[in-house]
Length: 348
Image (cartoon, rainbow, N blue to C red; front, side):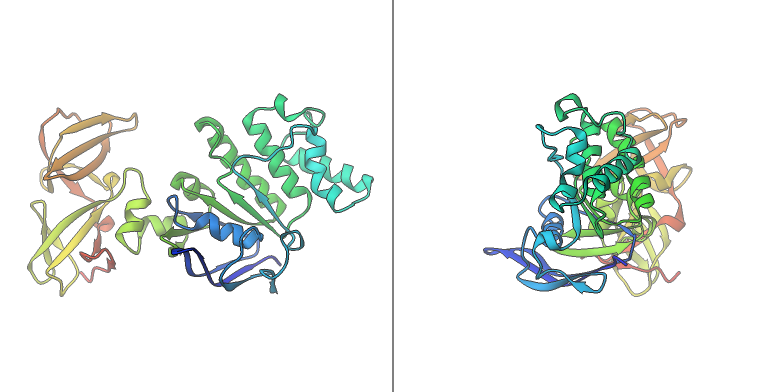
């Protein structure tokens, strides 16, 4: 069992609080993604788990064993970095074998294990090559194979696909999840890319300013964000937030549309994703200030008093710049937030 328990992990660099009492549980064989913008603390947390940084306070347990007091080499974890860290003077075979050599494993075991993981990551025909003869995607596979070869309890991955081009990232995402599922390895994966997070994760832990704001399945985070930060960070284009005021208890007006909302509030923010609206005879009033054809849909942007409002409409919609339209929201997709940004459940 390689479940992970992170308990009250805190880390400061001088006066900067990088992590503020992080608590997190990761199940055995789970693929958990730490998602957030630069500086949110996600890589610092990963490095503390790996033993490359030391927490000021807190504990890290793997499989019921406390590991934060062990040296990095004794934690039986493996880490894949953004820059691959493939040794240029070694062949692919010797790169993959590196960790096994450090463990002083017998040659027959080294050869068998290298060939096994090379087949898993589709490198079996490239074992005699050097890194200068490999593409970026192939070098990333070498780094992954080297980590898998030592049979780690936990795989830690820090933005491993960010140096690849868009098409190669797409291909590697699909392969990566399949490979790690086949190896039955518990994985913590760091990224700032929400598409990577949504496509790879069993669960996503969204981080902001040193804390985990929400940890749940990708679909739950997308549909039911706990606050406006998560709602605006997840989704592309981001969720719209429209000031709404109560015209009577439980009835709110937003951009000319009246609709039912939570009871007992005078002012709220109505959240609606751009893809959850369509052109109708009634709805939010909108002016098509900018029209961007994106293939399967058309992104319409309205700017009123510096407030940006976006709708991702069907590509069949016929619109002209400056046209006034009504956008009808899917009422089941509407979400409500306090002016301070916290989610509120509708009682209607």
